[in-house]
Image (cartoon, rainbow, N blue to C red; front, side, top):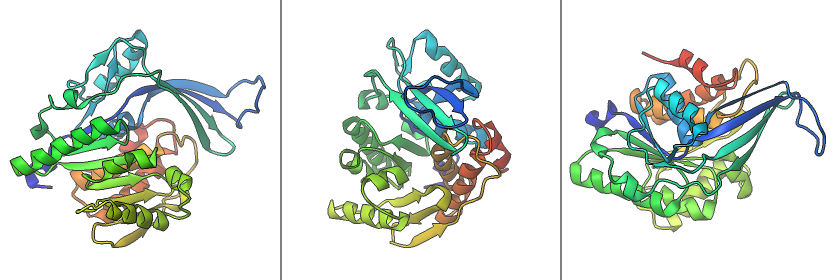
Length: 310
């Protein structure tokens, strides 16, 4: 990362959806009728949430994803504008937007999410290639839409090679291990989810880092990415490109109110620490832990601004 790219905005590539959030005292039993404690709807989606938290922390950020002209989507567009999250590159569709139904159970602190994307179109490399990459110092991707995302990443690699700039590439890796593994190859940083690790049978964060690194090595990766694995209440770990392993303890939240978006808050905290403040890996992951813990103290994301540093 060169001095020229450090002060540039972050570009977050992925999706933005409508989250319908229901708060209950406990998770409802099947085939029952009950009242909730509260409910609301908000803008969601991994890359969209990362954009929000980066903005709250004071980072310049743009979002790149498919936007809907649907009336139901207007509140999301207004929220993006209100938060000064740039969307000038985003293509638009007349299709209804995807949405997620979220149940927050207060007794257990869990969040259960059911997604509905209704074959909503995703951004393509043809859309991405219209972007002036010289504007950005960091591009963050969700692990999805492999063929198109791979081409987007490769265009950044080629831009770096031809321009002498150093745009950083990061990946939020949460689903479909075999299909999305190749997206790790061009990355500088890969944040790998605990849930996906459990699906793979990897029992600990250290196992996760080591197995993922080994799998990437078997695929012939010349420059391994830094691997970061948040592990919920156990904190987070990271494995740098030289094979050095670090464990970062968690920050205990004052109360568990809203765990929805904690992982996206972690991701944004890491980008903020690395890109904006130029902290080393351990410092940035430690701050990401702090951001994720602080997020779950209250609903939403605005209170994360209390951690904003000058």
